[in-house]
Image (tube, rainbow, N blue to C red; front, top):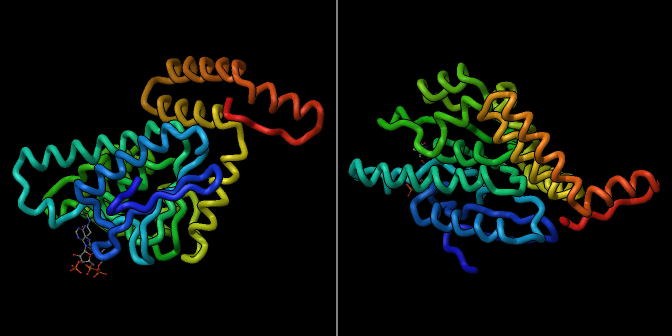
Length: 260
Ligand code: CAA
């Protein structure tokens, strides 16, 4: 399938999505969001994809936010519709049953920071910058920033960054727990691929259940969360890969998972 604002690549078990509007620093307009929605659906249905990498084309930006040119003259109804579209697509990324790694190669501001936070893991370049500068534009974060930043980095960090619009460097993002790892700019993709390959070598159904258990569990009370954990733990024993993983351990041989 051909996209205008997105590049989709598949290499063995790893799919890569690159937001491709470098002239606008990969800003997310409605068209790009709809393409992202479509590509996530495609990946969800592809049993051969075990892990996903999301990045931005060019050296300057991951994504510099939602498209300000498109938003500038929006009415209340249009603004709401745009927010709902972004939230729907980012939630789809949350719920994607495959791990997704953001390779943050530059600016991750507003909708860009929010997009990285919808991913499971963030690898940042030393030159990356994060922030939610929306209040400086007269708006609130609209693609999940008020919710995911607090959940990832805590309420105090979220309130500070969102109320002030302060842009932080990768090192600070690492310190507050917003990113998992910071590497030199020319190593970001390499590191993301290495993470993706390590994950793709594990039993994919188990990884899928882990993502669901962590994400769901963070939103509910501990009793319900632990019940869900027991449920998916039990379900693992219905898979061929559980038999394979444990048999290979006992027989001291290499395992070979089949996503079954
Ligand atoms: N929307 C639309 N266009 C954008 C954009 C955005 N978010 N960010 C950058 N661009 C465009 C610029 O308009 C410029 O286009 P032209 O060459 O046609 O003028 C091009 O990208 C390059 O940008 P700059 O010339 O500004 O580059 P710079 O190096 O001087 O500055 C920057 C880089 C600091 C990232 C700056 O571009 C910037 O501040 N961008 C906006 C960041 C922002 O406020 N993001 C939040 C948007 S609101 C949001 O995302 C809401 C939400 O939660 C859903």
